[in-house]
Image (tube, rainbow, N blue to C red; front, side):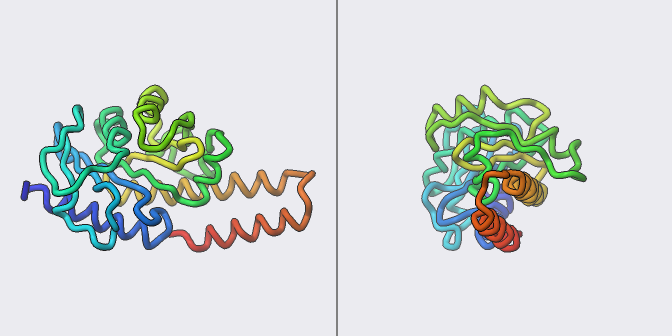
Amino acid sequence: MNRFTTARQEIVDMCRHLSDHGYFAGTGGNIGVRLDDRLMAVTPSATDYYTMTAADVPILEIATLSVVAGEKTPTVEKALHSTMLQAHPSRYASIHTHQPIASAVALLHEMLPWAPGCDLTALGPHVALVPYRPSGTSMLAKAFARTILPDVYAYLMASHGVICAANDLKSAAGMLRQIEASAALYLRKLIQNRSTLDKQVRTFLLNVLDKTESQGA
């Protein structure tokens, strides 16, 4: 499907960008992009982002997940992207990451509030929580489908990572940065307000958080 070559290359380029900035690691993390009313392109499974080509990016039917083009097996998280794009028909890009700070908050199994100053119209009221289910399973896809709301565009998957949807890949990457910044603020407040925490441990945790945040995009 040569008419989708540009969109497939944009997925390749975004995977490398997210890898360069610590949002993807190894082959962890994936993307789904709406191509038209029927089709989406997703990242291939277990493929090095730095050797991936546009031809490797599978094209699937959004509703059925049937593969219609592409040389590799689609990501095992394809159902998450299908669910996200079907729930938000005006949004064209869905990204799932294991970004470090937000993934740490996901271990707490708590909803994440946005940092002050965030545009809630574009982002939604908060980063919602999807209950824990094993990665890459139909159980996770079903839990996500039960959790997703029409006005919430970003989610923490408990003990797993992040997924969000935006109008395009660039906007989705910007949303990931705001999720990471909000997560950093949330964790910093938790650490500072834990009165029973040893002072040296508190200082160590805050230094780790500062270092991790400074290395992000």
